[in-house]
View (cartoon, rainbow, N blue to C red):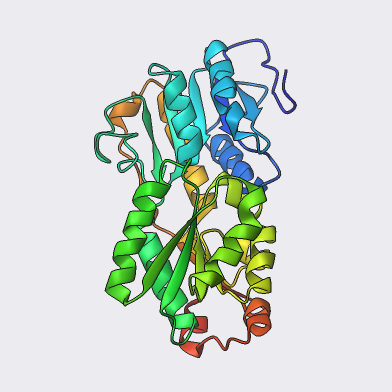
Length: 310
């Protein structure tokens, strides 16, 4: 039994599989999900058991871990982000799958449409294309004269292909040149940042994916070393040294994901549950990082921030 697995008590206990990287990478997400379940009357050890499977940075193990959950015949699988949803989808076309904060469920082919998902997957989306475009605009406001932006992406993340295409379109609209930089393992980070400067990048957008999320502090440090302002998607990444983070409120998305689990355990079919898009967004600006980069953030941008780190 994996660490963290909840043993079911006698009685009517439903089993939820949870496929993710590590409980330590973004612990607040897991707290919000569990709070959402409790608010709906699902108490671990009483009427629900959660079977956790952690990749711990070894994403090549995802097929094995997803198959383990299928072998346990869980009632539903929760798979945050597109990379975990992809592994779960490949493992089963029968067990309902709830994705959380999926960057682009339609563009990656995980659902037929947002209103009518069609298969065994549904959940909450990030509105990645719109969110990234807005984030790119905020980055341009923060960096005077910005003209060339590198995009750090992972080719193995299903949502990054449509995400990159969306950023290239947004870049054209904003008069920015976009330089895609592909990275598939942490050992490539140093070379990637050296390459950004060689192509004339003046800032970098780091797309959200488990590989980058778990290494966000290192990525922020490398960006500072190369004097590159950064745009991340998650609040904690700005707290770890990124210049700006802009994206949906992840706690809200995880609490809403719990409502999908609730409905499915009560008999709803995933194909009948529309994908929900975010309604709450967070802009965080790290003034310590701005100072280290020699940037003065415009007061109008600071006034719109949900949090300013000083």
